Image (cartoon, rainbow, N blue to C red; front, side, top):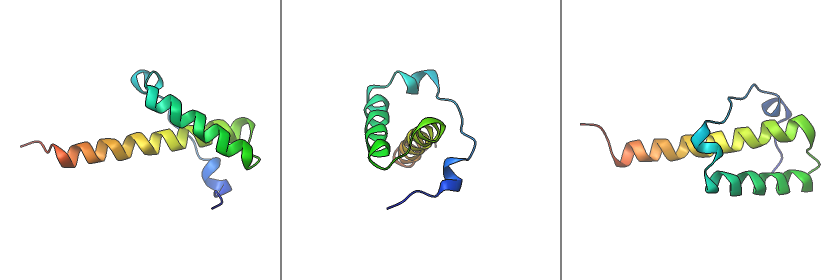
Length: 72
């Protein structure tokens, strides 16, 4: 599966302090870096890709938490 180059160039939000210190986020960032190096992605594109993947993962987790624990 290839990545859309336009998506790599999209502006990214900065990591929150809690997410940056999260061990799971660190492992995910490391895995993305390994995958990216195997696919020839480096530099600014690598940084943007890493931010996109971790942001997507944390967003998906938050969405699931909201569904599992809805506010009444």
